[in-house]
Length: 194
Image 1 (tube, helix red, strand yellow):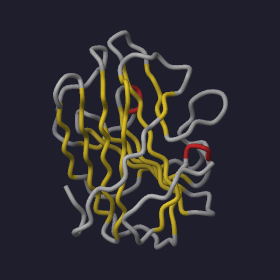
Image 2 (tube, one colour; image 1 turned 90 degrees about the vertical axis):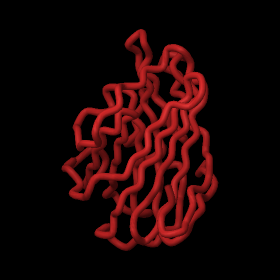
Image 3 (cartoon, one colour; image 1 turned 60 degrees about the vertical axis):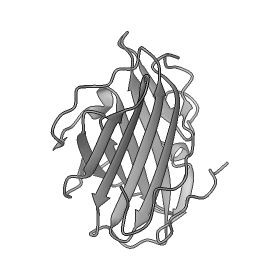
Image 4 (cartoon, helix red, strand yellow; image 1 turned 120 degrees about the vertical axis):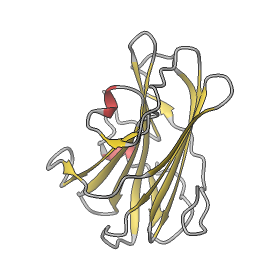
């Protein structure tokens, strides 16, 4: 899956939050491409036998996906408070939200359904790719990016993965999780912020 001739780039590894179970996933890699017509995101989960992958379904907007295995993208115009959250379930259910500021003013982001590829690979590994047409987004010079995942285990536990975690409980909305900066008109990710 590509966006207007721009390929998927980057493979940052996500870090497991220390409070979650250690089973379910061994490693998660994520990548993102932004383009004038939208974006493409990819997650590769290297799992173990306790990884829960929900049954494949017809793509549909659905709330509460983070209660089970869910792959997430957060985008915030650099220097601003407003941000966007995109959720992709391995079942191919999805959601998109807009926030006015940290965890405030949440509302559905009106856009068409993504093109999604969700595929089991050898062993307990899983690949998810999603491509959104997002031409209506406001023009910005650069984005702060958070790539995150919630992994459900057969024991009912949830582990939380992100490029970076704040101190304390897992919180993908926290500014520390927006760990990459990406110019709005490029096809490459910058190094994580420290």
